[in-house]
Image (cartoon, helix red, strand yellow):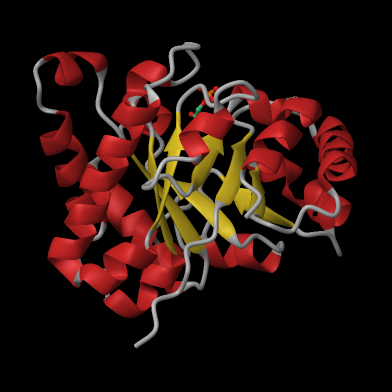
Amino acid sequence: MSVRKRRKVIAGNWKMNMTPSSAKELAKNIYEQIKGKRGCDVVICVPFVDIPAVAQAVKGTMIKLGAQNVHYEEKGAYTGEVSAEMLKECGVQYVIVGHSERRQYFGETDETVNKRAKAALNAGLTAIICVGEQLWERECGITAEVVSRQTKLALYDVPEEQLAHVIIAYEPVWAIGTGKTATNEQADEVCGIIRSVIADKYGKQAAKQMIVQYGGSMNAKNAEGLLAMENIDGGLIGGASLKPADFAVIVNAAQQ
Ligand code: 13P
């Protein structure tokens, strides 16, 4: 069996920023900066209410649309939640699952991360599953343990056939929004650990094909170094994804 070459994926996570009208402008500005760059996949993950406006803005471009969360039930009495089918019908192809901000502030657990990932995959969405240690866990020397555990639990009961629609984003919690980035070597090491979890569970072939992103203060200055590392197949970018020129530098650094 031939091994699919890993293509880099640069995903912006806009978090809770941009009203629909400003989101549309930002998406257009990003497109202006990166049009013609086809050497990596580009995704922007926007707030739910911005989805229709951004879907319109990126229509016919290479920019793909993502959401920042998805509920695990198909429908029903879940006030305030949004299902995978709803997202799909709005043109969403990717969804972030288990972001550390959801784990920290909204009671997300490894179990609900797994349920959301499965709901997304079963609906045909690509799940960007976030894992990452907190500072005190790193200081205790249990980074590998934490990240392996989160990865294994997120993929519980996920069949190998669906792995082409899974992206794992390694986001050390201490590097998110802090301006502190993991060093290239630290990031590469943990992305390699994630890959070895995939190898143990699904085999070497699957591990070679798995897209593993780094996220946590990736920016226009450090992207090139991080993206050159063997185990890093792209980035999940917060702050810098709101600045079209900076985001374009990162997309440029990911061209293959
Ligand atoms: P920053 O790039 O702002 O650190 O955010 C990273 C992140 O959380 C992406 O999901």
